[in-house]
Image 1 (cartoon, rainbow, N blue to C red):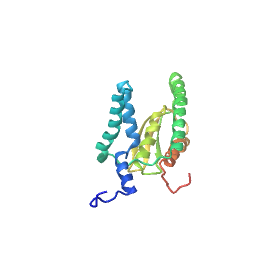
Image 2 (cartoon, rainbow, N blue to C red):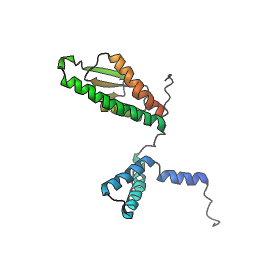
Image 3 (cartoon, rainbow, N blue to C red):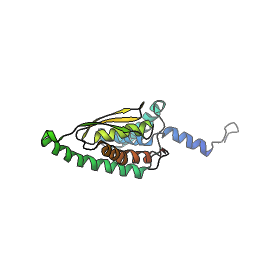
Image 4 (tube, rainbow, N blue to C red):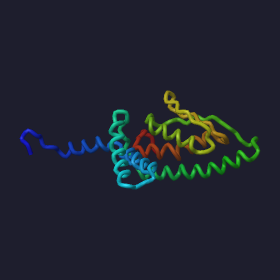
Length: 183
């Protein structure tokens, strides 16, 4: 080691590594997307996927916020709940649409938000609109709620409570958000 070169600490090494892998999920997704688009596992495409996965997030890092820590078991359970709800809701909506239209009771509902965390609220709104039966959702951050339009709603308060318990509570847990309220 040169007398003019300061030794590199372990923290310095971790910091350098974290700059290159600040968004590991994005890196993996970019690399996998490249391989899927190239339809090949040739060494040149593997090397290209690796370079794209490392370089693109590094170039975009000034525009990206720090990745949130995620509790993956909770996130996977939430994903399974959402997928199940999509399947069940599709059958319910098909029965509603193919049946007499007089049975439908469309409604607008206000779903109060427990957090001001932008990522959690955006995911919550996305999950709500992904599930069939809810036509649209608008996040109103100023009022701290999501406006949801449902195709059929017998009991708005029960539907709001169900959305909050099935989707928002696990989202808050997955992103380690403490609202100060019991879950």
